[in-house]
Length: 442
Image (tube, rainbow, N blue to C red; front, side, top):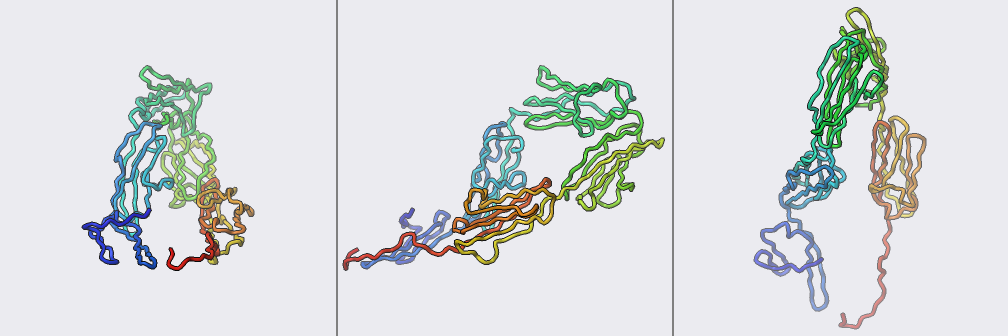
């Protein structure tokens, strides 16, 4: 919308020159100079950008919102020009938000934390921050009463108890060496809620065996949080190792496993691989409590069967095997549409190749962030197990944009984006026609 420039003491016009004193950010915009005489007129356009230091603040700086209720954070900024606005939560980019206002329709426990708004241009950036808290109507679980480490003889009864509070009322689960427990003939688990709204949960074993020893954990869970307590139970007897499930771990991560050992007293808990006691390299760490850590695991060097060995002073031993499988995420070879820009009406094709990574691999293509399935002249096909091809037939200007290939397997996902440009010949939107005018007329 064009508006006439209002002249005053700050803005003056001298012949064909417009003078603006003490320029403000509000003066930024497109200016049109129009020159008329009795024969006709001409005009020229220019753009004025008044720069000013950037400053940002997020409001409200602190807000407390009840679970399930909406929340709004507004990034109020000053300065010019502003090229981009981005949001971070607890230091991580929120890719789904890029405007001044960040809205959360229904607050969950993972939404609480620190939020930052960044405004940037080519020369500088500024940021503001705010904190979102969960409302007082909801209280994360808290374990008020728990059990301690214990050493006992086999045959006696065991009684463990946990009492937890919270709003909403939490549920308590039990674990032995990180495996979920449920009631059996010998083991009984139960819980009840007191008049004060606290949960009382107990675990009873009528006659403990040596292999009942280990790390017992009670876990209190609700929709607004988790609390847990762990203690160790020793039962006198010969070494015993519970069966260990196969461990799947992604290449590059750290392996952390504790041997599920029972029996007391024990002289040593060690780990072996191919009958060699660990550690055998700097990546491996073994602790006296039976914990094994392998840093930055790789399939070629770390995928194997590991053996935990528990030994007492009399020379009795128990062994348990752990199979470690290293999963490799996909790695994609970068692709482009080439240096030569295709012409409208031509056909073009590119291939998305996963050079390494476990199979099966799922491929997906997007065009400017949306699925290509809605485009009538775009076709996707899979070639073998590691290649996906995208073909665009009868190119038009509507096909110009960013094409992204996403590859995913059990270990992770990766992607790459290529930009497509199309040479489109000029065409008339409104074709001029011959007209006749009377001399001196408009």
